[in-house]
Length: 121
Image (cartoon, rainbow, N blue to C red; front, top):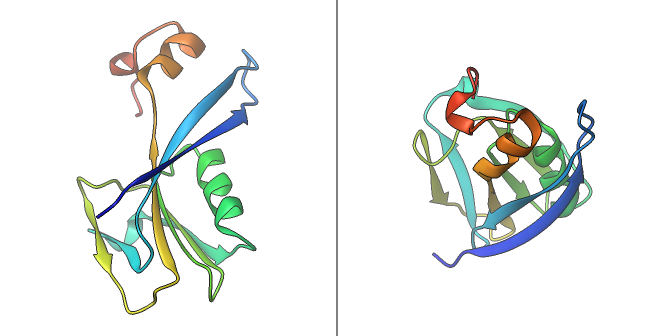
């Protein structure tokens, strides 16, 4: 499976008013995400584009993976990652999976501590 990377700059509304970049890894078309548990689905709506779907994932602190079908405009956000779900081939050749890659430096610059010191995530 070929992976593509997109860099997105997002303004956070935090006390530090930080701006950071997140990296998205995209699968080839014809794939969707299958979570291990149904409760890992946090959003299942329509979006006008893959970019808007990825932005919705970037702005949701719980989102780690999304899939988007450009034919139906279905956008699904998941709090799962590849350790508790899988990217699978689907009959729809217009579906794609994106996963968020977060940098540990985000936590150090915003919270003045490493990401291993965070209690929740």
